[in-house]
Length: 302
Image 1 (cartoon, rainbow, N blue to C red):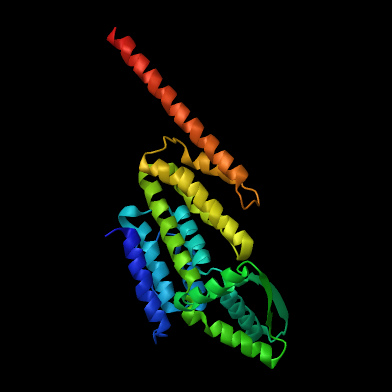
Image 2 (image 1 turned 90 degrees about the vertical axis):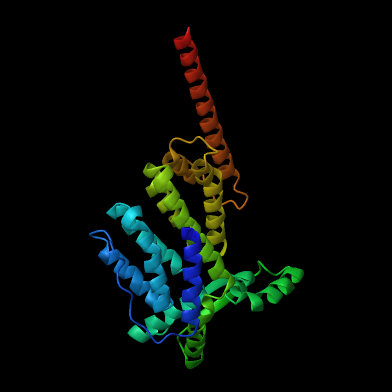
């Protein structure tokens, strides 16, 4: 069974434990073999995810980190980045999270305030379990309203607002059954898989692959653009290099060059052009190297 399959099974196991609102609220132990100096970063990630979703979700985080200890260990600085960025992505921002944070701020300070966030209809529906979301998305699609935005207030200024925040925060127990969670789970597992492949195929590119997680933030259009740009770089450069289909000698520099070309353009014109140019250069360089090697062999044979 692959590490990706293990990750999916772990996600499902912890999903059902969280939904049943398990009695165990004890934070998990640090991963075995955690590098020296990484304890504080991992501990911070554990407590973030305990607050975000619960003990079972924090255990999933620890289990995912254990892939990079032991035989697949990475250096301490890279391990810290994996731990930090994975915690941030696992605690992805959605309406439930905004309600959680707003309610926590009120409970800590007693200060009443209102924040207004604009969500697309399909983003709000994606927070629902698939069985409930699909018919709603179908209706929204027929009406052409999937991308229509709606302003949602997150308010602690009165009793009604606080009650709404509590209801929205309580919905976290449904989060791991949602369409958005399935998408996030698939992304995290693919990111971890690409890091592991870089360890084997191009160790000097591991840090660059890890840092691609910073491309994906927030929600709304910026989130979707970042996700699309990430997949374009992975599918166009990293995966074919690891598969042996693209003779790219310096993947780290190629990733940096492609990221520098990113613009806030949903069509990805500049990014796609940059990726095509990088691929063409790599193929041409490999062909020239092959020709030179053949010439050298011919000369030696004469």
